[in-house]
Length: 591
Image 1 (cartoon, one colour):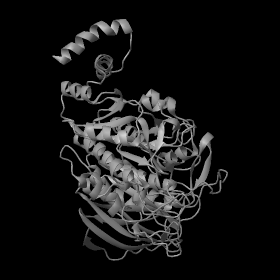
Image 2: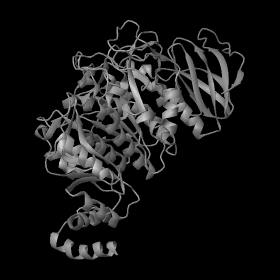
Image 3: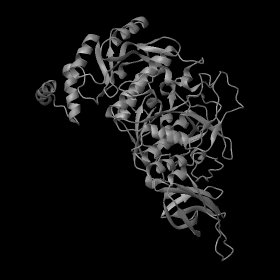
Image 4: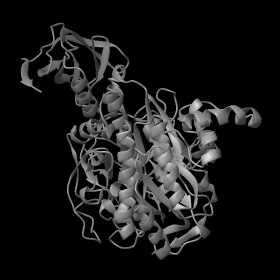
């Protein structure tokens, strides 16, 4: 009956207003909001109330935490019928000013409240049938997770050498994660949408032009380019083979972006901005979402406030479980943080948002388990180059049990504003490397779950970022080695899980000029010592060894068996003799 009423009213209102809409749902929601004050469909997002918040609306609770003095956020039962929602919000009073129906989240404005009265209001609303959770609109001093005093280098037009076994130079971070070897499998990659919540983006940058999109025109207008957002976007998805600059981890991508940064006159940031931005990105089809930001950089003690530990984490987990229960799937990748306000590393769970979630502070709805939430969060520490293929945790990185994996984060060369490039350091740089790798994995097989993707990324590794024994930690922190992300191994594992006919072949080419192997019309990049390893469908055939200019150096036979690793031994290139090159005996082992 209500749907018919809305439809009837639309037939009168639309010709009068002359509004133009892009979808039927938008029309229905606009009319429903006009008449009833809330949207009708399950995919509506309204967050223009953010533009009305400034620092004058924030009441601080302590040095790092506060709340918006006239707003309350309410999560409701997703099974409530529209009529039941009307009855519920009629009881709560106030004026509904925003919502994300994907997350079953509504924001209500009341007269100005004190700390005690806002908590009393939330307690009262939480007691209403159909309310899952009511909370103040919390605020924190969220900051980007980077160190801003690193040197800036002018763009160097020379093409860097590649040596994955001894990474160095401006492309060391790509070498360290074996990105080139992962790109060998580009024929398996499908296009994927990647979400970024960060400071603004340079839409005209030669590496990013045509790659950045926004969930809505309003969010596009909100974009203000920032070197931090550009740097993160470049690491993830800078164009390949365009003759300039850098190459991002995941070229086969569209970057769907949200500029989260508060206005120039506002330092406090509402957690709702992250929630709404996340919902916008999920609705827009983003699968892996990067957050190179957190709250530890504004803290001066080793600990979370009550709000950080329980109120905010409850809201984050409810939001995630609401989205998962509606069929959306995703992975949230967050930086571990760069220490406290003085740069002293802390336990990473003090970086807030997704990093703060753990078994004991998660609240879920609609049958989603805490494990399903944690299986979709990757927290990334920063690694520094310790030469010769070994890595150590950066002196600034947060650590602890919340960390899932490490990635290069010291002296990372990527995009900046106005078409430029620069070096930055921080876990802000580490997180997008992992985001890019996770996106490559998911692009191999879109049918994987977010939990599958995290598992593949975090366990398909071969080296570690070791504990930094040279650093004297100011806080009591949980120290441990972390696995180093490896794009090649992660992509290969995704291929194995997708295609049971593939097998692995590995060996070594002995010859100074050898650069790649071509087998079944696909090219596989050698490591600098001539070793190789790749997965391919079961078959037998001739492999051709090429130098960097594409000249043929020799040929040998390969036999690939499904679900088996073939150890092909050494192939010796003998340019001074007409005799056939020798290949060692082939052995087999189960993968």
